[in-house]
Amino acid sequence: MQQPLDPQATPARGADSRYSERLWPSPGIWVVSVGFGALLGLIPAPIDADLALWTSIVGVVVIITAMLVSTPVISLDDEWFQAGRARIRREFLAGVEALDTEDMRAARGRRLDARAYLCIRGWLPRGVKVLLRDPADPTPYWLVSSRRPDALAAALRS
View 1: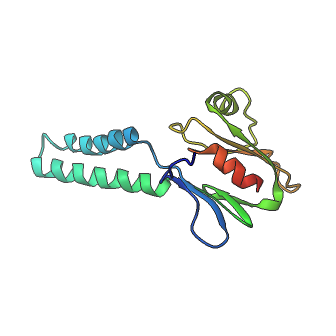
View 2 (view 1 turned 135 degrees about the vertical axis):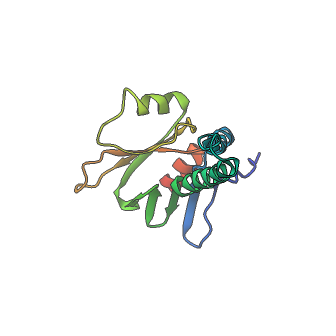
View 3 (view 1 turned 90 degrees about the horizontal axis):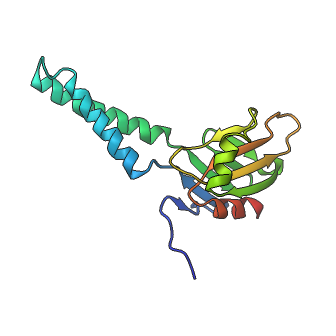
């Protein structure tokens, strides 16, 4: 049975792309963030109602913009693997492990190596652990959140 496509974790467009995913915040985080931006209007409310309205509008716009800009992209093509701002050539990937909720919790906590690169988001309970073999880099692995860790792991293995 074929699974429906997840709009937040779809194969990347392009001839040599294999996987692409954007780690968007969950709907609850969007609601709370927009609400917080709107609440900023309470600060000048005792002074001026118009200023309070504009402060709320600016607060919402700034928070939405910050969330859009800071949302990391996970992508994989024939040559590169990118997680957030970091990228590495595929030739330096030694292995990959898809992590369920419990394994990811342990990997972020008691089993975390301080030298690891982290591209994790708290609202995504699963992810992958990508082992590296770059002799010039002391980073032993990347820990990356994903909505579809099995699909990402399969793409990294191919």
